Amino acid sequence: MVIKIFKSFVKRVFTSIFRNKKDIKLGFYGPPNSGKTSLVNRICKDFTGEEIGSVSKVPHETRNVQFKEKVEISYKGKKITFKIVDTPGIATKIDFEDFLKFKVKKKDAKRRAKEATQGVIESIKWLDDMDMVVIVLDSTENPYNQVNITIIGNLVARKIPVLIVANKIDLKKSDMKKIEAAFPEYDAIGISAKYGDNLEEFYESIFKLSKKV
Image (cartoon, rainbow, N blue to C red):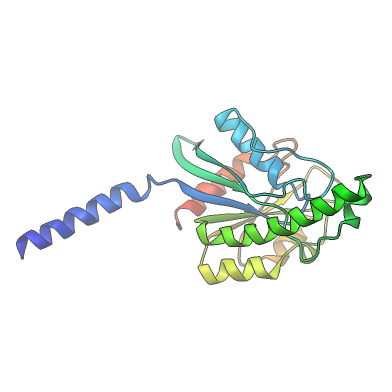
């Protein structure tokens, strides 16, 4: 009996010690062209020296889930290691004609649309694997037109900690108040992934959210 109690105690101690040493899976979700990959690239470049993917004005540039292991983020003397997961833009409908507007050839447009649709399905499947999620929105656009009910529903059901990031605050049309009003139940911060504005607050929020994992 004593041996069993001792073993149980040792197990709890080791679990407590190593729980915070695992790599936290941090997923970046949001609509196309909200700046997910731009933000992820900046994070990865700052802490690993390498970017994770390419960005473009053409929607659905990211059409596959891409990730980077062992990204150790430092903030105010603290360090946490993350597995950063960048996902394709979530959209309820992806039409090849959307790509034609950007002078993409019809054949390539159809291929991109097919790949982007598959990417959305893949992104939702990856939710099962996430410890934390950052939802990146375009602060110059209506938040209600950007939010996918399926994603929000999945996050709520899984009780996954969420941070709302309103990107593009460097633009005149940016409206942080609209984003905050749309998500009163979540912490929301404004940033500019392009210029790196307010990233200190972003990292502080990430560390704060990690305590819920």
